[in-house]
Amino acid sequence: MIGQKTIFFTVIFLVAAISVFPVPLEDLVTADNIDRLHSGGGAVYNIKFANSAPELIPADNEFKQAVAGVMSLLSHNIMAETLYLHKKPENFHTSSNNWDNTQKIELLNQLLAISAMEGIQYYSASRGTMRTFFEYSRVIDQPNRKNPLPDPVFSALPASFSLYTRQKDLTFGDNTYLYDFKTARNGIFFVQENLSALTIGIIPAVRRGNLKSVFAVFDCGDTLLIYAVSLTKALSFSSLHERIGASFSNRAEAVINWFTGRADLALSW
Image 1 (tube, rainbow, N blue to C red):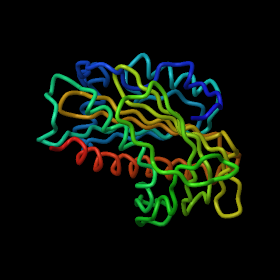
Image 2 (image 1 turned 120 degrees about the vertical axis):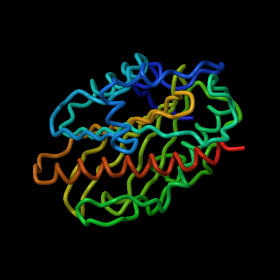
Image 3 (image 1 turned 180 degrees about the horizontal axis):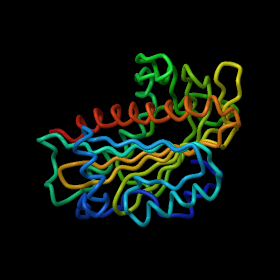
Image 4 (image 1 turned 60 degrees about the vertical axis):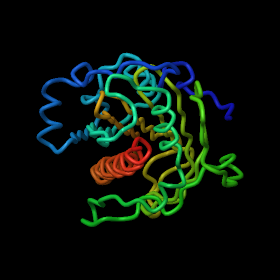
């Protein structure tokens, strides 16, 4: 769909087009982080204000290579990670020892429902209250034209797929993004990159291309393991770094809650 070259076309990314066994949670997450997930209500967070390596990243070699590729392109000074364990609905349609193509396609289509992100809420750390995340969220044809398009829906798994979006939020304004999707053996991943500068009011915060967020979904039998990391090279207003880091962490949580709600409906029969 998009001719622009990105690192994600040179690394292995999402779900394979064959049925595979799910990955045991213990193969992806350390025992310590499994304990933290269970004691923390299914979620673990990590925010660092330096060019740090991810600490919560699942131990999947293909995915780790993809994230390493992103990190090689960006000397970030803010990193916000979220690791989340979500129990599938009791009546999810596939057996616990097989992640079939139907389930993969359904989950991918839920991730591609960009317009459905419009109006979701997140917790604003600076205001101490819930706030609208995306006031406007649409797939568009090109960043310069911004003509809205329907959300893509697949009936078969694509090897890779990219799209542009226009998404207006109440913190960083009206911006365009590139989303890259691919299908790899053990999970569903995408990357989001800002194609316009992010501002807080009139204050420039993140230049074009200096925000790269990676989102991954892994099948672990009766649960989904979800990981999100935002890598940001923010401008050197140190007083804003903590606010930006907390914002991206809270937004990741909002996107995960949005996705898991839709995933539950898609996987239920």
